[in-house]
Length: 288
Image (cartoon, rainbow, N blue to C red; front, side, top):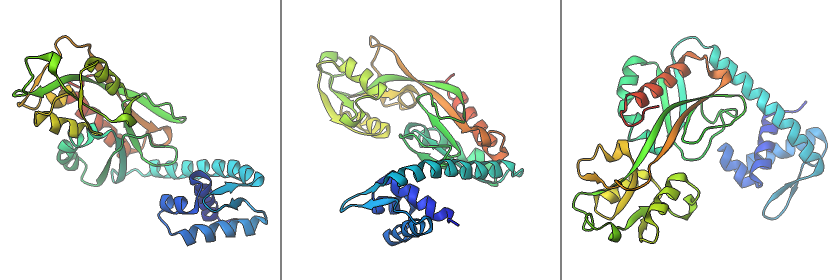
């Protein structure tokens, strides 16, 4: 008989490529991963992994076992989701993954209302730019600025987030567009649509600084550093900023809400999804 926990640790090693990486992913120590992997190999009487000096490489049989184990993992996660959806009370923890721009500046401002309406639901909001897997239960609900295509999920568009160019009203070059300096993301975000939009507008005008989060762009614009491309719901809310993109091409991002189909009828999950959709709908500059 094989232990599911041994298989789970093996899958983490296969995904991360090292014992230490698997340990970090599973939040256990290195020795636990090594022991679990050895136990699985003993139970199956095969070597699943070649332990190299700086990496772990699956053997041929290890690759085959990994494929079967992934199917087992999907089944186990599916059982857990169905069980979670079956709980009728409006209670429990619901994890939401959302872009940072929508967490602190928008959703977090309405948490008191959600708490008043659903005192027994613990809403966990994670500000994450990267994609998470709903099938692996890395979140119960996800909000994305790109239409998700994860298998087994239910998706709907809940709004549109238009952007504009903003600068502090006392910005030294406000009346001289040819002298504008721009606040952009760093090179890791080259493919991000708003980065391409901003750089296209900047053209050969200088980038004065690179920051990785919209909240940092907002702070820099407030400080008079330069011109920033900001969601309009942020820019228009700040009385010290003025919108300066009168002749610039328009740009917006769609806002998508996604849930795994096994959880779509869970009452706590539905309550959270309704809350997110209502908050977006109430914001005048985030209309669907």
